[in-house]
Length: 461
Image (cartoon, rainbow, N blue to C red; front, side):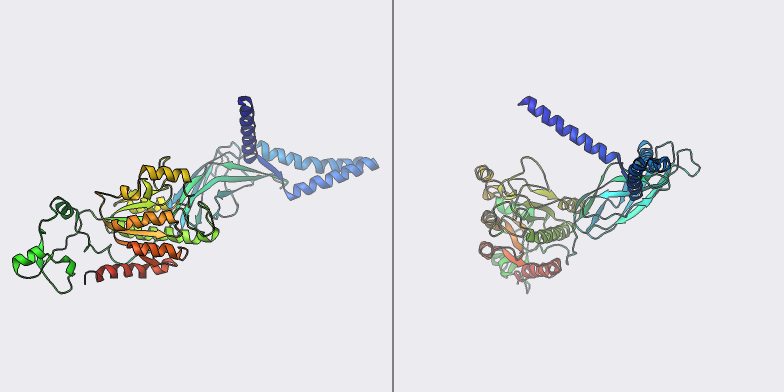
């Protein structure tokens, strides 16, 4: 068995070596070269049949010419050193990035008849092959050239751009070679961010960390800060001990949180697709998932700009904090990713650029998760009640169970759902205290965000 494994490994290594060699030294005849060769073979056969020396000479010339041209471009490789720079290296969907290439000729001879093109990943378009202006290292015109082109990515992701492909042709255009130069570089395309109105969230329901500590230490103590009642103050904020002491209605003074926090929940498993097993992502949910990522980017950046410490929980295996131990999802014990200003918005967008739907953990993994920790245990105790926003595409019953338990840890608890979320799941979430708002596109996000703020403002009336 060991010998068989060694042979298989050797065969695979040889195949990979030949593949790399073919990619690096690919020499082909052009259409003109193929015609020369075909006509030469036909004339050679006729010359032999009719015993014509003149025809045999012409035939031999036509056959040898493409072969010599192929040897010419093969034995004179285009040795080029490539430096590639993106400006900017991180670009949003639909944005422009300028790609600057600096090519340095390492060959002793000029690269006459050479052209180049970049080889990007699918989803990135680069210009077609253009001519190079490189001469020899001792040439009077120099031995390097700068090339620039612009890319406009249409979809988020991390794209490899490169290596550079350098094409060479012989002077007669009978053969050309295709070789790779340089190494690929990553271009990060982040989700599109929709600006949201306001400067964060109203803080009327967040009493501040210091006051929360006082309340936990002395639950029966009077509020330390009180003021007289004003029209429009919510009755739930009436400070009854202070009212009895002063003889007039007193309310708790608003206090901005010293360390405001918020929570995002991302549906990354799409495990509730009707009629499909766990881990299968139907094609029609692709657009819905991309909309979810754009919503996460917009809401997350808005909260980070407002000074919130943002906690992101994934329903599937962690992609924001990848690890061999982060495979059960944030509602079953995996550590959530945390972002904070300054720089948190950029880190969040970079992380979201590579998030993809992931298979739901196997039954064995789910049982292990149940033994290890539950959502109730994970969020019990010192965990604060913070604004929580769930972005849902297609959740399973297990996901809904976790979200139902999470509802009492969110104020407000808002679920931005899409039409692909089943009606029973919505009903359970609403009964647990989630406010479900349906979104069909990012154009609806601003109105929905105003609706959330309006609900919070109405709660104070």
